[in-house]
Length: 68
Image (cartoon, rainbow, N blue to C red; front, side):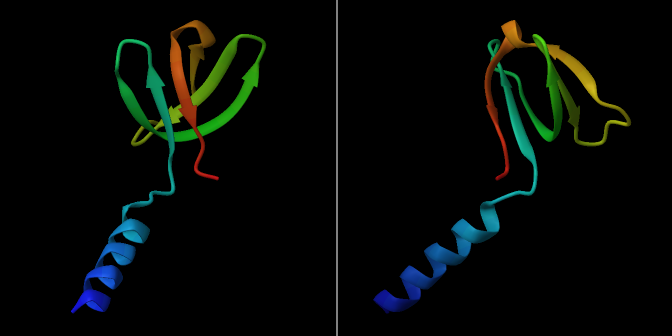
């Protein structure tokens, strides 16, 4: 029984991982999408279901978590 619980937990952790980068702003807004590049104090990020990369000021960003 214990083996099944451990297997279930490991499977859940693997499936919970996404192939998206995560951008968290200082106001608490969270976006999943794709990070492109940083130029100066501007980060280019394309949220899910968006058509183009959006410029975001570094001053507004709390955390940028890449999928790697």
